[in-house]
Length: 305
Image (cartoon, rainbow, N blue to C red; front, side, top):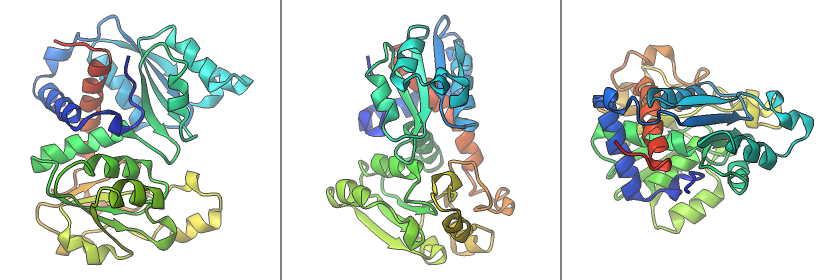
């Protein structure tokens, strides 16, 4: 039995395989409509989510399976004091696979020790979000035709952004990737990512506070929101929340084939005027998320056509 706690739990070859399966699902969805018939997915979301939870549910339903679960901790027995381990152990007796989101880093890994079925980490605090990363990789592959030899800019909250941390870890295994980290001083990429992933593997990266300065060199621009829920001090959040706002003017120096990504939800860090720009790929990301999760569910359940 396999879990997906961190994107690096999957080899590069396995990620390529998932992308290929998802591409086939996009082309011929009817082929996969009954693959999970009789199978059940539990969505255990101890933290609010719209896209990720509904994407998992849509994915399982599109495979012919069924779904049960909860969307906030207060609606589970943890509100009565039950441990996460006991909750997961109980639910794993009812279903075939579990997608779990939790505000505490490492909670899905701990939960996996008690589960009788595969656990998928659907986001744990500011740590990891592997299925969003798979979504990002599928989108980059569909837009660029490759995952290597790219200059990738990450802009906004790089300190608490679990989607950023996961994607950096995944792309660091590809050839010819150059990273550009764009953030205020207070929200810079954590030292452990730079030391353990980038420096350790001799990868190229630069840090800047200027989006305008970085823009012309980027193949991919990954925008993120400044996350209010990760701040201990509201005054710091208010001071930093509007640091970067992407608008058509800032895109004037960008490459014609730039790919703009955002894990969503956005607040105001991307102007709605950018939505009509052909380089805006974040709504494509949303669609791709369902198909890559379909492919992942099939893989972890060891199902084939």
